[in-house]
Image 1: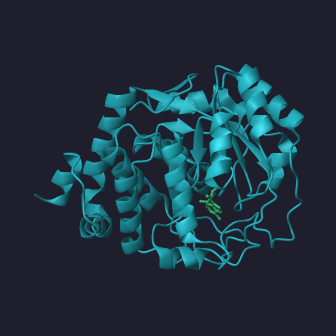
Image 2: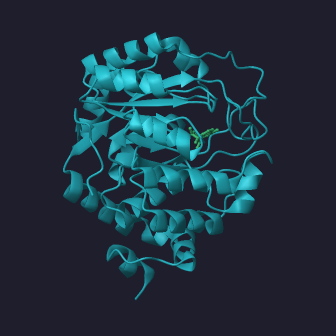
Length: 339
Ligand code: 5AD
């Protein structure tokens, strides 16, 4: 059986087969995109879930070579939102219709348990997603017990040597994988993911990402093109492409039809219409920014990051217009993973 047949039948692929698909993607693109669109429609109809993204701090103890808020970047004006500011952002998001809030921030020692409790108490009908980096199993358990529902932690790459090319020696591939395993075991709806076109990425490392996802079976996967940020060691590296991102989105949708798969901000930022293309290739989630404006301006992971218009809560009407052109509509539901 050839690898397309296997993929379409939901059978596991080997690394060599993923490599074959990626290297010959011109040949396979249209059939996989059509199948991904069909699966999206079958499992989600025309629904697109929205998540209100709050960038709670750009303070970070890590020094990832690709990331604009890495600790060595002295050109960042650092902030941390107060609990009051975060609750206010949630309240504004709630009024706009959001029923999932995503707290994303750099990695710090802060204990977010009291904040999680307050948000869940004040907005009991909302899902709360955290994206706050690596923590101990006990810390993850405490956040789950406080009511957090989901956790996003991109694995960044499933190849150890590639991981070490993207991160300084203080960061450990096996700890990241430990975190993901703990999160899923604890009961979080768990998301992993990676950048497309990060320096040193090859069809071989991408095949490892897909094999990892195939075995791990996350509930969410975030992928978007790598976009250089001028103040980082990778500031002069080429960006990833929309084309390869879309191809990988299609594969992910076919591999795991129920996956919550965002058309990421990076995909929308790198090319006008990128978000819509993502939705046409299998994505079913968008994450508009609901942070206070000063936070958005300083949460610069990469250059030219969108944070207004259809990328923001102020632009939901614009977003809806753009989605209706592609036959889709925003739904104001929690949008949990359905096993
Ligand atoms: N380009 C694209 N994505 C980036 N991220 C960090 N820096 C960049 C960049 N320069 C992604 C990482 C991280 C997520 C929050 O943002 O994958 O996990």
